[in-house]
Image (tube, rainbow, N blue to C red; front, side):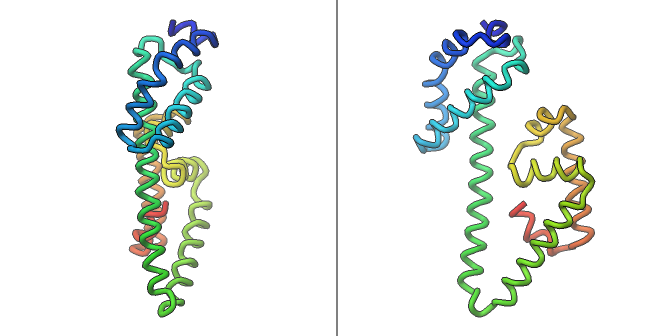
Amino acid sequence: MARLFRSGNEAVYEVIYDRYWQLLFRFSRKLLQDEAAAQDVVQEVFTIFWLKKGDFDVKTPLAAHLYTLTKNKILDIVKHTKVETRYLEHLQQVMQFGESMPDQVYIEKELYDQIEREIQNLPEKMRIIFEMSRKQYKTNQQIADELGISQQTVKNQVSNAIRALKGKFGDSLNTFLIFF
């Protein structure tokens, strides 16, 4: 069945979809505690699964592959939610003290813009990897798979980017790394 799927057989895809959709949905709903988000995750997993059918390793058990895709998508959502929460907390602080600290808001905006410009000035490969990691919230494994490089290369490139940015901005960068 796996070989037929990999070759693009839509009937096999439908069988796999019918067999695993409910299982993956229950798994997602249990972890996310949100029915709509769980449905979105499973739909996205099956979309990715179909689009990357040619990359599917027929030696990997089908269920293991689908559960791994689902788990990774859930981890992306959780990571993104944490970043949003930190941003909202920071925004709430800025708004709370904003009237008495308008200069601080301006300074932070300027620093953010400078950091963004420096990110754009990073070497292209380093910039792409850094943005995939910090802006698209992808794991090192996802980036490595997508770009056809090793996880260690991804880790090194992200570390080098942070080191380069810290060299320019020092401790000021630490506050803004939560947003990147």
